[in-house]
Image (cartoon, helix red, strand yellow):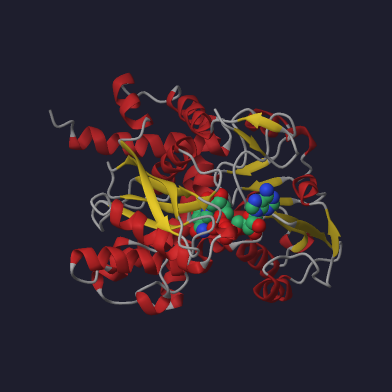
Length: 425
Ligand code: NAD
């Protein structure tokens, strides 16, 4: 198992997929589902590794390794983003694919779970190299992708432009334009209004419901946000719009702190120009590693997985952890957080706004008819609040924390579909 460096400057061997399996087992133990069926639901249906040669700008050839995992297609096509990062490996992609299955079931959209990734360092590559890598990846996995079978979306270090390259490459091979093969596309290329903001918007809907449940006034609350990319920046902006003071933020290069609240709109404009938060005049600089220990009511981890572990869970000061990222809290940390009465909104609920609006995008592509921003947002609001209250109700009825409840609800929903469909012999 590769060793990965995480925030607290500790180096620990982490299997993210083992973490998901632990989460699955804890929930499955409380459900009355056949053991064989549970095995079927637990593991990915298909994991593919591909070699991707790319001609670099200097004329040399470089080999990259790409992954695509379909965890489940029981409830519909595999759905999930594509990550570009030096640490991408099969273990991580399998974990992220499994979380997608449970996430789609939590928000009750008709998708299974999938995820993809390429081990690469986008910071050291030109735009042309990124485009050639993306097109080679799409062409190599052409048979796996499709609007009815497997639909990618953006994740860490991929964006609307990447999705446009995927859509174009797939369409060139299909010999006609296929918009619904990928979501998170630019608006002019059949994207959906509200998709770019959807994950952060969903995080803040979940935070609002949690504050309401815990009877905390947003106007008296403070927040710290780890990560200032798509999810982190939009979460911070929407938290501020809800009246919450965002006192701490960080990205991979550094942290910012202002006890009076950071002006997030100004910070977003600053980042557009400087590509990082460091140097922003409206706050003091601090160590990025301190952000998760910030003295704030709400903590939004919105960077990478395995940030809050059994080693540091006792040092967290927040009352609410809203998981913008996938897997930021390890299974060993969960009981400590529960014992400390910290309310965790689990990733498979908290960041499900992104896949929900991806579903809306796919629906609009297939209809060939496009919704207004208001129509998208009203529907997102409906899906997120109803999922939040389904999970809260299950947590209260079963006397378990929100993650366990979310897994229980999700596994049961997928199992119900398998039982009705039956196993084709
Ligand atoms: P992104 O690439 O847009 O942003 C990632 C941010 O995290 C950047 O600001 C980066 O500087 C920061 N970061 C990276 N490593 C860090 C570290 N060690 N410490 C502090 N900051 C660090 O990615 P994103 O799309 O915002 O995704 C963030 C997380 O949210 C991932 O876990 C992803 O799987 C999850 N997620 C994304 C979406 C989506 O729609 N984009 C949906 C659901 C979940």
